[in-house]
Image 1 (cartoon, rainbow, N blue to C red):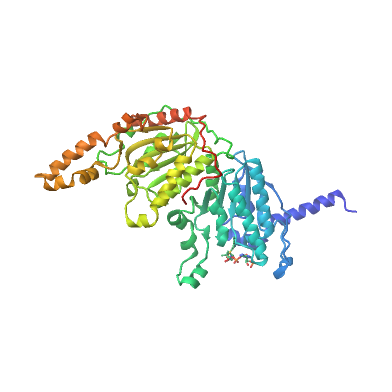
Image 2: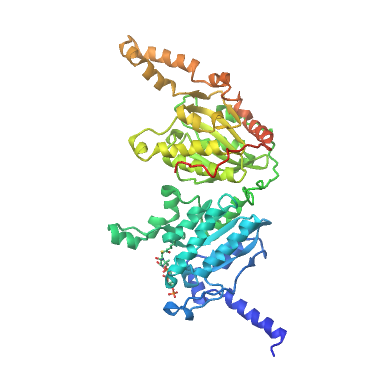
Length: 517
Ligand code: HXC
């Protein structure tokens, strides 16, 4: 008869084997690439000692291609729950040391089990991707597993935050799980995502390209917009997850965490009075404005390198999380193009899902003109921003710092799209277009015949500026709520957000809307 002691020792031995993952050699290979193992990543991400593993003994049931000889308890993914900064978090981490982290049917079941628990208990899911994709030896069973993950990514979208951390390969259809989550964080030089790899591309099109060029972090940060953040090294990448979670609530029925601040809500900043250059065509850096108004100048920018003409990201005001949407006049004059519209619309919708108030800083000359933009569907993409702002029921506060021209004025959190409190600086202009352009259209023939066209043009521009291109016409009509001293912007926004704390608004009953995609 086996004694209790022996049973415990047996358990201990089996657990040690599980902790050894795919064996010494495979772990060494993982480390030699500068990568931590799946468990080491979880240990680093979660609070010390908080991780509770679920399903460490689960094994696959495949028998084809000698798979009955290749059984690892726990299979190719480590799953469970724990805490990050004391808050409940579910996590799955693919183990590349076991069959290249390839997804078996049971690995998928382990993942969907914790996703279901996260949905029921209302806590975020963090997925760490490091996998060769579908377990080839399991064929269609593996695809069945992927499909079940995708379904949950969608069902829990807008219910609990989902964050994907790509710290290895993510190839083929496997990329669609990260793509369906709220944020994709890629480790620079290590994470790679593509639907078809370099080999297939070469065979089909003849194009030669490296894995990194095709699907590395820089590609997805700058060109495709698939990644929201890129991290340096294993720890640097996982630190981004911890930082991001600090701004967002556990689920869609909670408020984001409050972080006490010593930055006074009434702090004024006189440098803001001179931040706008006298010449309206000269750029300035909107990040300088952001840093001066938010708590302790902390701004966590999202998609920093993609469509930099619009800025989106998280900050706090009087300790409360806000989502910032702003033009960047220092890049393409802050005009809206297809990528900027996509980027802003998606961020606005995230904030609205998770009760994060939206603060918009507006300096927009309009949509970027040109056949390239028209052919790329600026009509369809620009419409997403109107849709996202209109649909959002969270508190919305805007400040027009300089230009708000034409359709872009309407798009950028205007009162018409039920933005709650809207301010404008004295340098602001709400108009159909800039005074120069308007003079050309209205007075073209007159100017061509004028004795001194330049003098006449200057007179007309002045006249138009006095009548239209200033903040007061919009303020007279009540389209903006006040013209404010730029130095007082922080206090004005914080007081508006405080007033809006208990805001309730809703949409007409419907199954769901049909956002132009
Ligand atoms: C089974 C796999 C595997 C897979 C890797 N391995 N990918 N086993 N199924 N998909 C195994 C390898 O056989 C090897 O086993 C171990 O994992 C490590 O792999 P290596 O190739 O030695 O590692 P490395 O050189 O780092 O290359 C990593 C890699 C490469 C680039 C990911 O393994 C690779 O190209 N794998 C195939 C990728 C792929 O085409 N997957 C299918 C994509 S389609 P041993 O025993 O030698 O250590 C797909 C569809 C998803 O995923 C659809 C969802 C809807």
